[in-house]
Length: 256
Image 1 (cartoon, rainbow, N blue to C red):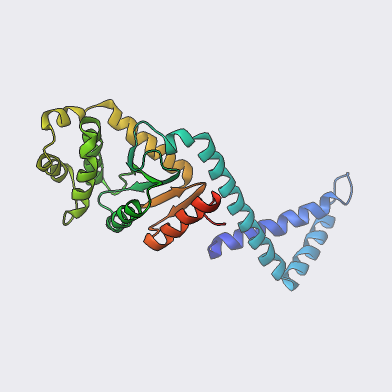
Image 2: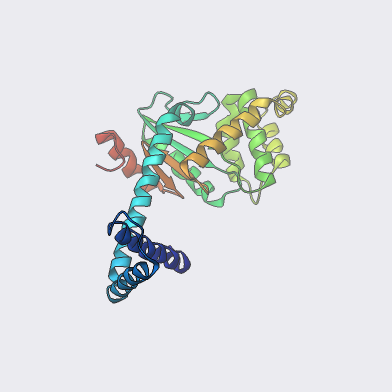
């Protein structure tokens, strides 16, 4: 918490403590004078023992984090179909792999470019892993345009998606609709069918589904990953990803 939030929280804790003390005095109303006296005693005690407020703040943060994790797990359970097995998603690697890694990415995300290399290395070395790719265009209109082309290509010619994905991350500088269409054309895609599919309602539904999942998971950036019941914000990196996968293989959890 920042300083202002901590101060406000501390004040609220002091008042609630005082209020609780008053409430156990008696069922009848307490006079203003009596209330003031009790609040003064509480205030003096807390000022003399400020570590109590610190302890309360730490406990509050832990409680809020635990509630956040529990809420996220519930959301993942209720939306596991859309998260891990959506008919709109792109699957790379072994489609029947026992270990699933879900990645939320943006084609204009520089860190995602590094993540692409990690993903390909992991897939090459692990036959029981499948990667689920979620188009999460959060870096402005160019990213939205590129995602639109990518989804349309997946609808038109899914076998070309991996080559498209690879070529997009190999481009220098930012990408947009024009560059994405150029990549698709260079791969020999049916451009008439592709451009027609760019107006397919499925594109909006696909992006909407991803945004809904990301919002429920509390994702704010790319790349972000979901492995098992855990969410990783930011680049995992090849070494850590390998450890997470090994742990999932051994005990079904990201950490044994």
